[in-house]
Image (cartoon, rainbow, N blue to C red; front, top):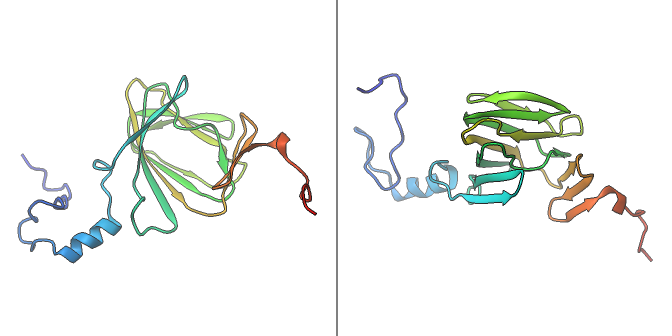
Amino acid sequence: MTDSTAPALPAPLSGPSPAGLPPATPAALALRHQLVRNFNEVALQREHRPPLYDSVCGRLSTGTVARKLGAGYDILAPGQRVCPYHFHHAQEEMFVVLEGHGSLRVAGELMPLRAGDVVFIPPGPEYPHQIINTGDAPMRYLSISTQERPEVCEYPDSGKLSVAGGGVYRAEDEVDYWHGEP
């Protein structure tokens, strides 16, 4: 039985077009490649650093024409985290929980997350954050962020800084602005 209220799915890239629509032209297929990604078809890579970090991630926006947005598809193993507790100085993030449940560690608090939740994290030290899968099944979500540069990310638990394209540093390694200058 078909649910007539469900939206029609787009035609697969190599399959037939939906009834009543002409086949996709080569130009339409090229445009789709620049603009559209399906998270069920993206290449996935496992990121594993025991004992706390184990996830499978796919970069959705890589190879698209997006200039100011990045997107990823994350599958987080039970009891695990994708990344350390952190905050961004420039980038804003949004997470869309697709499946499973867990916790959002944010601003020193823990709050429950479940399928259907949409999380908004602005940049700045007021909102350090981390997603933890506290369930017994994989947690799947979309990660969406602005791609502001330059970007500095801080990790309150370890006292480190990460500079986009520039490395990772600890606060105690800070030097004077003029250090090493003639």
